[in-house]
Image 1 (cartoon, rainbow, N blue to C red):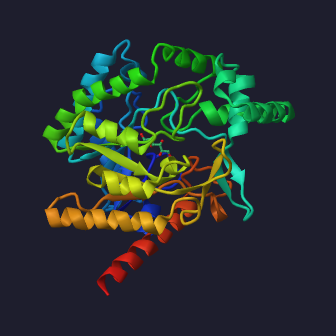
Image 2: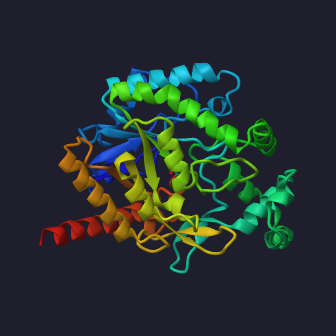
Length: 400
Ligand code: DNO
C-alpha cells in the first residue's frame, strides 16, 4: 500500500515539507484553480509538478504528483446540456496531457451539484478536538425551512420533519448563516460562493433528470472517456457519493456496491475503476466497505481510508478517529493486502495501491490553524500513523 497525502496547492496551510515528515511517498492534488470543463494543459500540470517537487526553501522534495483528485466532471456533462460535448473533449485532452506528464491515476466523481456535504465542519468532540459532522435534523431544517425546496416535505420522514422544525426554531441568525455556508459554500469540489438562489437554479436543472437518466448519463460519460484512458494507460477511479444517498431531491448513483457493479460493467475496462472511500461508503448502514473491497478489488485504483460513526437511523454521522467508527479498519486493510498479493501473483504493475489517510479530526495545534475542512496536519498524521501500524502488523503477521 502506497501512502499518499492530499495537497491543495501552494495556498494549502500544510506545506510539502510536512508531508515528508509524515512519511508519505506520493502527492494527491489537482489544478483547483481551473473551473470544471476547462482543459488541463501540460504547462499547467508541469507547473504544479514543480511545486510538488520543491520544499519551502526551494530544495528538492523528492515527491511526485501521483494521483489526480479530482479531474472535475462539469454540470454540463452530468446534465448533458450546454457545452457538454466540448467539455468531454476537454476532459479527454486533459487525460492526454496528464499521461504525457506521467500521471496515470485520475479520481473524479459524478455527484450532481454538491460534492461532499456536512452540516458542521467543527463539531466539538468530548476530547476537545473537532470533527466534521452531518446532522440529519440540521440538514432537513435547511432543506425545509431555509431553502424551502418544493418536494422537501415529501422527501423527509415525519419524525425528522418534527426534529427539523424544533431545530430551526432554535437557530439564531448566525447559526443559520453558518449552516448555509457549510452546506453550499467553498467545500472542495463544491462551488465557492454559491448562493441559495444559485443552488435553486442548479437544482432546477435536475428537475428533468431522474435517477435512471443520470445513470444513463454516467454510462455515456464512461463510453466517451474510458477508451481514451485505456489507450493512455490511465486508471480512472470514481469516488462514491458523500453521503451515499439522495440529497435535496438530487439523484445519487454511486452510493452502493450494486451501483459500482453497474458502473464498472457499463464499460468493461481495467481503466474504469473505483476510488474506495471507506468514510463516504461507511456512512450508509447497508454498505460494507470490506465486502466492497473484496468484490471490486481488481478495479480499486485508489483508497481513501477514514471512519465515520453513524449516530441514528436518519443518517446523522460524524467523522470518527481512523480506528474508531463503524468500519473495521484492520479487516479492510487485510482485504486490501490480499488484493495486492493477488495482483502481484498476476504480475500486475499496479499491485501497490495508493491510499491516503482521508480527513482527520482537528486536534492539538490543528485547532485554530484553519486548514481546509477535514485536512488538518496533525489529525491526518495521527490517522496515517494508525493505518501504517495496522499495515506493518498485518504484513509481519503474514510472514511469521
Ligand atoms: C472530500 C473528498 C471529495 C473528493 C471528491 C472526488 O474530502 O473526498 O471532495 O475529493 O469527491 O472526486
